[in-house]
Each structure stands twice: as structure tokens, then as C-alpha cells.
Amino acid sequence: MIIVQILINGLLLGGFYAVIGVGFSLIWGVTNIINLAHGAMALLGAYITFFLFQEYGIDPFLSLPFSFLCLFIFGYILQRFLLNLVVRAQIFMLLILTFGIEIFLVNFMTTFFSADFRSITPEYAGTSFVIGDIVIPYIRLAVFAICIFVTFLLSLFLNKTWHGKAIKATSLDLDAAMMVGISPAKIYALTFAIASGIAGVAGSLLPLTQAFSPSIAGS
Image (cartoon, rainbow, N blue to C red):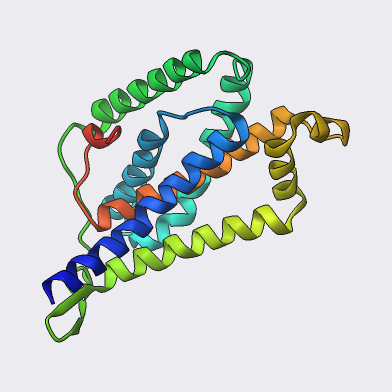
């Protein structure tokens, strides 16, 4: 039973890390940027949810759309007006730039939110689904379900919408995409914004499963 419990815990946790990886790989696959600041951007979502819960009592799950929107806008501006200027630079230079952005974000969060570990404990935090000796917290089930749902929505967007197909076309053949009127700068910004928004959602789910602080941004 212990092994089964460990496997279930690993599966539920894997869904959370997968949705972070989806955003990271989307940026890399389309823009060829290895975004080292992705973890720090996800952590911004955690602080947004924490602030809304502490100050206004908003349920963490209800804050997900707001976190997505905030990080979507931030990611779009960051890519459109900064990273797009150097998107054709050598990959080593892009690594240095995104690493610098990560350092800036970590210091920003440390300054405004302190380096203390924080977590969110709603009233239903202790409720669990029990089968014999196996205990599955409802929160972890909900987090896993949301991660799967977000991944499904992203897949639907990429395969069924014009902008999604434009993102895929830009990733597969940039020259051909430009020949049919697709603007790489706009697509890169949209891709980065979507991935950042997904990171924000993942970050908002983080405080429900573990304590967090700015120091974990790069882990």
C-alpha cells in the first residue's frame, strides 16, 4: 500500500510539473529561447494568489484566471518590447538575458514580499479521499485535474484556432509562415504570453501543495 500511495502522489505531482514544462517547451519550440526566468514568472502567479487570498479572502482556485491574465500581459510586453529585439542573437546571449530577468524577478519578489516561506491553507485543505490505507487529498486531485484541463485547452487552441495554427506554422517553417502573411514578432509575443499565463496558473496552484519563497524560483 505504501508503494501505491507513493505512485499516486508522484502521479499527482507530475501533472503539476508537466503543466510548467508545457509552457517552457512552447517558448523554446517556437521562439528558440530557453527561458530561464520561467520558474520566477510562475512564482509571480503564486504571490498573486497568496495576496488575493490574504487580503480579500478570494479562493485560490478562483484567482487562476486573474493570475493567467496578469502573467499573459507581462509575458507579452516582455517578449514584444525586449526579447524580440534580440531573438536572433546567439543562444548564449539569450540565456544570459533570461537569467538576468530571473535575478531581477527574484530580487523584486524578495524586496516586496520578503524571503519568508509562505503557503495557503483554505478551510478545505485537510479533506481527503480515503480508500483503505490510501489517502488522496482533494486539493491535489483538483490541482491535477486543472493541470490536465489547461494542457487540453492549450492543445485545442493550437490545433483548432487560426492563431494556434500560426504558432505551429512559425515553429515548423519560419520562412513559409512569413510568406503567407504571418508576423513572427506578433506570434513570438503571443506564444510567450500564453506560456507565461500558463506558468502563472501553475504558480497559483503551487501554494496549495507546498510552501514557497523567492528562493525556489530557479529550482
